[in-house]
Image (cartoon, rainbow, N blue to C red; front, side, top):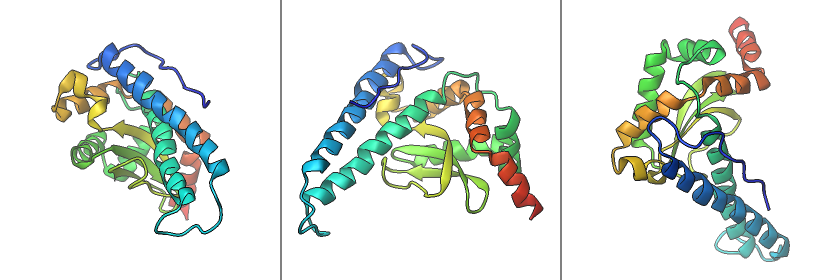
Length: 203
């Protein structure tokens, strides 16, 4: 079975232990198990007479994209929380370059989150070398190729309904307070995005 990455915290400001446990131990863990199940089924799926209307292989491939993105997005979501919500360093520099201010990025993120059905992702687009907030209606709908996901926000109701009911706005405030920008800065460093951005500006 795929590895279920444990949470690095039990509760967060505004997010209860029960909310996080249900989200992580039940929903996320379920996606990990489902990826294994689909991959096993793919080995046995016929490669003959595959078509765009229906084939076992086609259906399994599509559902793998949903389940696997569900794993990846949830792992990044849980990993990018547990901080103090204060943006510093490289991520702040990139945000200020592309939005003018942290407040404007945050306003854009929250507005995107109110309109999204599943996820909002702040990603660095490797083609235009800018940050963007992308809205995804499902794990495999709205994802942008050739972009590095930096901030991951889950806006499915399961992410907040135990603590907030239908009050998504209050959940978003809690998410912002708990963002771990040190984690985000490590991702920027891992992909050498500041060097890439400086070369883009100089070109």
